[in-house]
View 1 (cartoon, rainbow, N blue to C red):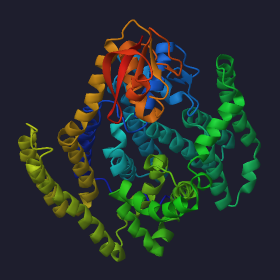
View 2 (cartoon, one colour; view 1 turned 135 degrees about the vertical axis):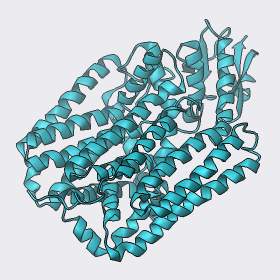
View 3 (cartoon, rainbow, N blue to C red; view 1 turned 60 degrees about the horizontal axis):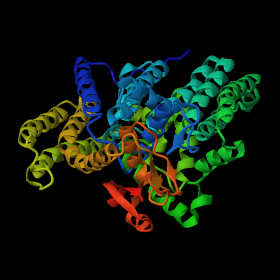
View 4 (cartoon, rainbow, N blue to C red; view 1 turned 180 degrees about the vertical axis):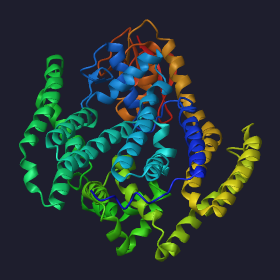
Length: 539
């Protein structure tokens, strides 16, 4: 077997190892040290993930997920099981327990990327860089790791699943290939539904089609893989339909609609055309600073040299074979494509390491763009010292006194040590996140904390009594999920919705609905967003 041409890229050095240790220690501190600092988010799906898991624990029913006591059909239950397990482990329902599965998944995702890339390229330094590029890209490091969402865990599963396609195909072990592909695909389906099998179908078609081995699609082992999926899903849904009043057709229809609602068919031609134009730019922004490396691939000679390696070709095909689905879908969030980043970043990191003179000018622009970002950060700290939103922070002068010299020192070493420039960018991003946690998060926390304290105070006045959420007041579920979460967590009871209003009972209502009944206000309650309502007793 010929040695991969990637083995010689990124030769190991003692300085790189020292920087890596610092990045890992400070990175884990930045990730876990503030994990529960922010209350549950009231703008994303985080509250919904937490509420469904909370109701599982409160009801003791882990098979049929519910939302405000009604069967929840949008997502299968696997990720909610993880959050519910975290709730039970901590013995409380809070943002720390809600986000722990996400944070552990990011660590597992990065370790899996490292293990796979090292195994397939024979280059530990390349593997380290790809894993850190994924973990420390802008979207993940400054947004996804602040929320207990499903996507990092799902991406970990999908990346592992698609990696099995390459590993077992390389060994010609097609029984293992299809068993692992559909076994992990079943877990991914139980986490997010039909997209798991879309990834399997597209990836098989792209890889075996590109290598001219269509016959492997009808290999007998493929049937075995399908049976693995059928057995796993069949077992769960056989138990589910014994306990759930939801018809199978209704559940299937919801799973299909959840996958199709962001397609061109649903959104129309105008939105689709606009998305086609804006998607590349948004992708470059969300996954900066590493997407700048894509400029290295404009040279045909670079692509030809890289694609001599079978694993590089596989990564390139996996990325382009799956990304087009999201490029064509008008309503797509950046977190939907996190599982494709390792494949792209293997190619980009390999291209960046090429010591070719003809790439020197492109590398100059990339590296000076990174340096400019480093030099802007001391200026940002100076601005923060005088900005009304951050000036009151008592620790800000100390943070600036430490942060400004640190950024300048990192910039100086970056300039003086070209071989370590990528590693120093990793270190820079970790320092930025630590300062972000201390300077930016407190201002964001205040707004969320106001909702939490208000809702918990109102809920405590209803302890030991039945309480309902009036249906029209809670019509916008995404907006009121955070309210349902805090009320349910405080009362240790599910908050059901109802349109039936009975005398003598407690309800959460807004002014419009409450005015239709004779009532007594028990407590004011603040719904998102700035929607003032009351806990009322109907008389």
